[in-house]
Image (cartoon, rainbow, N blue to C red):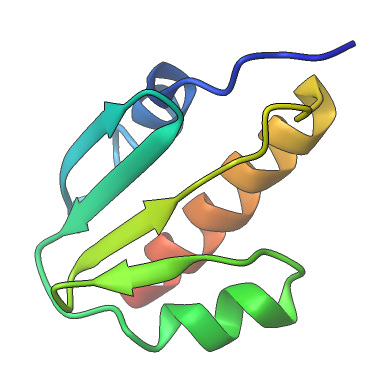
Amino acid sequence: RRVLFRSTSLKEALQGVNLVKEIRGQGLMIGIELKSDCGELVGQALAEGLLINVTAGSVIRLLPPLILTESEADQIVAILKKLISALA
């Protein structure tokens, strides 16, 4: 089953993470702005099998594919929550 990855699932999952400043999106491009620099997350996410980009030092940028499944979207959310929570 294919699913449209939305920032709402990220907002719900990251709701209690104090380091998250804002989650925003345009189409499938999603930005998670943190309150501090997070460039080291690129390597950590890659080690977890997730490819992300960090822009402006503190914004995690996601560009999920159109063929993303629901389980893959859940995996992305779980990995990001773990990595961002570990930064705090």
